[in-house]
Image 1 (tube, rainbow, N blue to C red):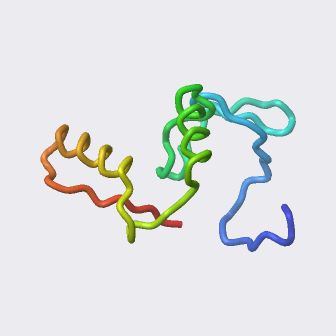
Image 2 (tube, rainbow, N blue to C red):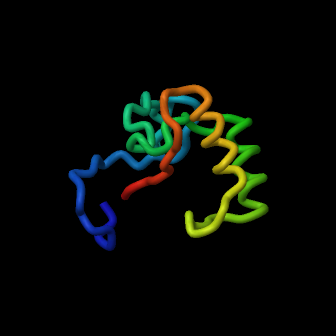
Length: 96
């Protein structure tokens, strides 16, 4: 373990190098099924070409902003979610 990283979790000694779909690989090339799923924040799998393309396109425009401003893409997603469920509004958030 890297001593400069605060030991806030009971970390495994596995050092992950890459991911593809539902799998991740460690530095020794061993494959694991990724049960952590981005700690339920980004459970979209790894390296899907459509997701990589969308992320790169967005990163080329604006990397991050706040809900203090209107975000057209966020509004479109909220409208799609509301149309598909019982809710009238959507609250986007994350934690960490």
